[in-house]
Image (cartoon, rainbow, N blue to C red; front, top):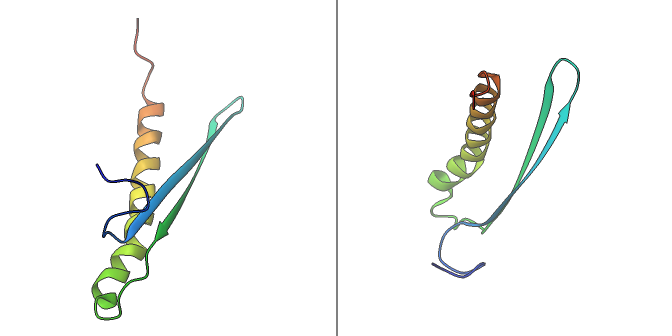
Length: 78
């Protein structure tokens, strides 16, 4: 395992912050994701930048959709 802020990847850190608020009829969920990336070398920008720009949004969307599905299922009986 590498130490924080070391290595050769483009993503240095990724933090996520979740907030849940319950009302009488539903639950509101907010998730904020903050990523810190390195500069992309010019020669690789054409292939790396689209991934860096698109992947976080798709990942967050998939996480929120999975959370919605999990919360909409009936609670397991104990």
